[in-house]
Image (cartoon, rainbow, N blue to C red; front, side, top):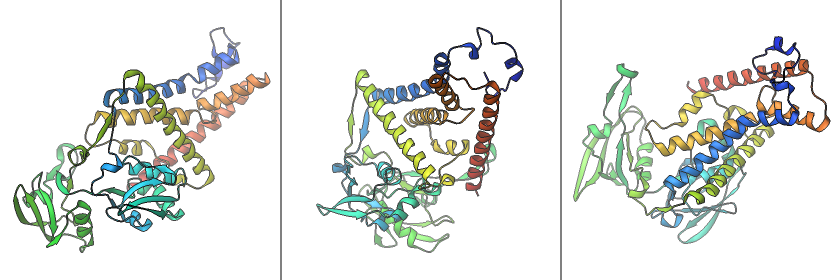
Length: 384
């Protein structure tokens, strides 16, 4: 066949019975969709096995004890500390999932957010400018809100310089000052900060750069005051407990082996549906291509610095489905390009000439390489 190898010498010889080009169009079509079919099946199978192994663990919205803490962009919309985000447009958010709310805004074009404030529903308007802001690549990790919870220290981050064996690390400013895991931070410079968001915003409001701050905390039954010298970014590099099950009442929906397959299919369909909408918005210009494309550098950045089997399999399924989706695009040199020409042959009975296929594949190959170089360039520019 005329593919990326461009073995045109063999194409000059008469077709042999064992060659791809000697087979009927319908058989060649089956071969061309074989790869993407396996990618789709793999993604579906991984999702199904994840549901069977781990079930579906979630935090019900009704169990969010202290409401949510809005990020700066959430404050622009009108979310207030303590609100419960219950719906985006007509979609009811019965589970805590700020990423899903963001997806509805960026991909589905949702323009209304409903929060529960003091027991009453309040509707907030989402402007197109906010949606565009959330779609930018540099804001891919930005969420409208996070959980409002007490600041019980669950992690402290070292500061490291260098690489591999030449890397030198020093403890977080919080650890240097004597703060320990399990301490509950309740105040900053004499001002009460009952929740992590209060402390975070308090530090953020202080002058930038290194500084000395007073941190009040609870350790068991004792109240303590510690002086902390922040890093150059004004941070103490301590974060609250990330395991929500230690702070909130979670729920887990378990599935049998046979029940897991419909759930896996539903999750795969939802993911592919969002991909289809995202590409449509890119082609229409609603989402900037330069903010959405990425190379292997972006893919590497998706993986956590700490090993987690659930995250690993989830990303593996996503990458398999994305590969299948992109491979089906009707671009010569991709499987989708070959499928497009084969469907033409099946419908018309006319087979494109080998010369035409050679030129089309070359054009598609150049387009793909150009796209790869462009995506790599975008990722490199984002590093600086």
